[in-house]
Structures are given as C-alpha cells and as structure tokens.
Length: 65
Image (cartoon, rainbow, N blue to C red; front, side, top):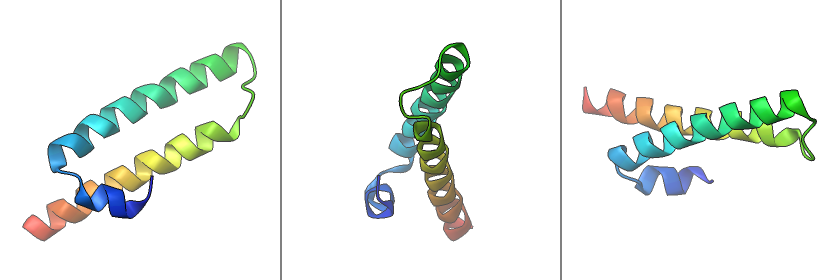
C-alpha cells in the first residue's frame, strides 16, 4: 500500500486497517512457527505496512496539535 493511499484515508479507516494488519501479522507469525511459510518475507512486508500506518497516524496527530 502506497503512502498516497494512506494520506487520503480518514482516521477511523486507518485505525481499522491498523487493527486488521496487526491481527494478520500475528496469524502470519503463528503459522510460520507451526510450519514454514511459502514466502517468509510476507512477515517483513506486514511489519512495514503497520509502520506506515502508524507513521501516518502520528503525523496527523502532530498536525492537529
């Protein structure tokens, strides 16, 4: 997901997306611990996506103050 898409999303959608991505990351980690994933880099990409969402939320919080 590109940062341009994240900047156009409302805050409530960003929060929902953050929760769903965190749940997805937990599921990926659990399934990887049980049996190796076909693409273990998907864990890395999920972490980066979460970081992008959190960065956008913090930027908006700083702009509102």
